Every structure is written in structure tokens, then in C-alpha cells.
Length: 86
Length: 381
Ligand code: SF4
Ligand code: SF4
Image (cartoon, rainbow over all chains, first blue to last red; front, side, top):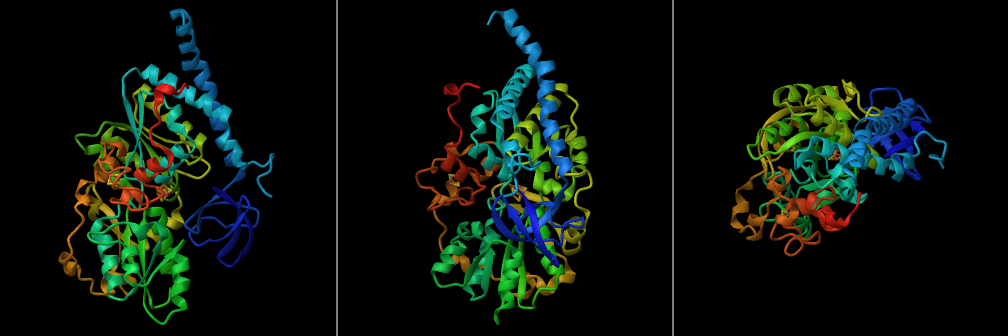
């Protein structure tokens, strides 16, 4: 689950995980972290800064998968089912 | 609170039932289109199994699609002698700290919890930095029994590089995932047609690490996150590739995983650790599958600092039940927990016989907790 950085002191960040506060270390993440950033935490260490734009990209990926599934296979399948009479 | 409705990170969006149903529908249609059954795919991440069980995703998988859990739980694959080393150290009077899950993993004759019950000093920590802080406040030695994959090993590497106190050392049972995928792919009994790779581990290593694997074995790999939609989307993409018949690597977790991965973390990892061959519990000897401290960090290597003599262990008789545990077959994707005679009877979370019943990421524990494979004949998609 991603968390949002509330405050930073040196290599330690106070992070809000949907209401739960935890201290997370910043020494293995490969980008500078600022207050307000979202991070992916693993055993008390931030391993990735998650840019908001990429979250939207993930959601867009779901949408695209759904659309593709619908136009290609889904439609073909539905058509064949109609043809088969069920 | 953050995560309100218009927030891009609202977790609910990754758990949207309508989208999940639609993706599950896509899985069914793809399975029909592939028209060869059963189709077996494997994930190698305990967190994937947890999400699949917790959100009841298996009930929405088409019957012809078998999603099996591979060697993805860091606790389950910690080998018996590694647990033995920690137990022997603790019984020698050395203070040992470890992640909570490791406490009850059975060694040859005892777990760390057993050692603690006998009076050994064993502390549970949720992070390696907590162990370092603990050591700082002590006059005695503290050994951190370190388990987990590259993701967790990076944290261990970070504290070693951050100049921990001299009474702190590490007993490394860390493992590296890519080599074990080779082993599973090469098993003659393996029916695995595609892998769902662990998003966290790939956050560190990058998805590029799987390209040579795909080239060698002709089996596709999709990197997936841990939300229900992440997993469903990952499976849809895996089936699409299987249908097309051109194996490749797809990154279905772009919000966290890049091709190169986290270079800063990789650099720390390989500065501290070197890969060595060794056994994974129940599976096999895995070349380059174990991470050990490099010689230059010998001062922090518990194996170098203490004489750990396992010979005393053979004075005790191992439990007769242990030999019936089929964890290895379960993690290789050959069997499921319900195939184990001991499952739910002699082996339950309160008194585990095998490691798979201990960890919250262990297949047997998860099946015990959530009911495992639901009866699909009664579930409509
Ligand atoms: S350590 Fe990370 S990648 Fe490995 S099983 Fe746990 S969550 Fe999955
Ligand atoms: S049920 Fe227990 S004994 Fe059987 S395979 Fe799972 S952990 Fe091992």
C-alpha cells in the first residue's frame, strides 16, 4: 500500500498509510523525496517514489485492457455465443 | 485524511468491483480462446497469494485457469539449517532478533519460539532498523536473523552501510528470486506456462532482469502489483501473451516498476551481498539463490563472528510428522495444501508442522485462513 509523506527528518520520513502513521527510512529510494510525495514501503524502507501521473497511467491501463477485451475477444466470443444459440 | 475520492491514489480505485468483474470476464474469454486446459500460471509472491485469497479472486478465475503459488514466501523457503543456526545461537545465549513470522518456523528440532520458551533471548522486530536501535541500547551482542528476498535484503544492506553499532551482526538467510524461477521452469514436472512476477521485488531489480529468463525458457513473465485489479490485469495480460504465442516480459505495474529498477537500491544490495548457491526449503539447491555478506563486511557477519556448531542438534530426534510435510511440492506448484495429509489436522497455524503453515504469506496458512480453493462449481462468474 502506498503512503503519503507527512514530514521528513534526515533519512527518516513520517508517512501516512491511509490513516496509520509509520516511520519509513529513505536511504534506498533512488529519488529525492519531498513532503506530499507517495512512496511504496517495504519493511520500513521506502523503495520507490510513486508519481501521481503514473498512478493515473495504471488506471488507464485497466481501462485499456477492459476496452481491448471488449472489442476483440469479448465481442467475438459474445457473437459466437449468440450464433451458437445460448 | 488523504486518499479522498478525487485523490489519484484512492486505493478504492484499485479495488473497484465493477472493473474487477469485467477483468474476470476477460480472463474467462481468454481462457476459452486459448482452448487448451488446464492452463497453469505461477506467481512467486506471498503477497499475491494473500490478495488472491483475501479478495476471493480464485472464485472468479475460470475453472480451466490454474493460478498456483510458487516459492514466493520468504519464510517458507528459509531452509531448515538456517533456522537451526539461529536456534543454536540463541541457545548459546546470544540475543537474536528477527521478523515476527520467523519465530515459529520449525528447524530440525526446534523453532526460535521454542528456544525462547526455554529461556533464550529472542526479540521480534518489524524492521531491521528497529533491530539496530535495539542493539544500540544494549551492552551484549545482538544478531539479526535476516530472512526475505531482495526487497528485504536491500533494507539489511542499507543498515550495514549506515555504520551500525559493533555489537550488531547479521545471520543472513536472504534469498534472490530470479534464479529460483529458472529451477521451477526447468523442473520436468512443471506445467507452468507463464509467471506473474512480484511487483515489490521487481521494483528493486527492474523488469529487464526477466528478459534473459524469457529468452531461455520461452515462458512469458508479467510483473504485477498487489491490489486485486493489479493481479487481475496482470493475469489478463499473461493470458493474452499465451494466446498470441510470443513469450515476452510485460510490466503491468508501471506505477512502481521500471525497466532498470531502483539502481540506488541495487547498488547497496550488491555492495553488501554476494549470491551463493544453497538450498531453498523443500525445493532444491538453487545456484546463486542465497545472499551472503561479502568478506569485507565480515565484522557484521554472525557466521564469521560466532562459532555456530550444529552438531549438538542431532542429540534431539526430529518430529516424525515433519517428514510428511509436502511444502516443497506445494511451492514447486505440483501439489496444493489439501493434498497434504496433515493439513488442518496435525498441522494448523497454532502448531505448524511445516513452514508453509507459519507465515501469513505461506500457502497452507492462507488456505487454512481463507478456505483455499473455493468450490468453483457453485460460483458463477
Ligand atoms: S517480499 Fe515482497 S515480493 Fe517477496 S513475497 Fe513479500 S511482498 Fe512479495
Ligand atoms: S499442511 Fe503443514 S505439513 Fe502439510 S504441507 Fe502445509 S505446512 Fe507442510
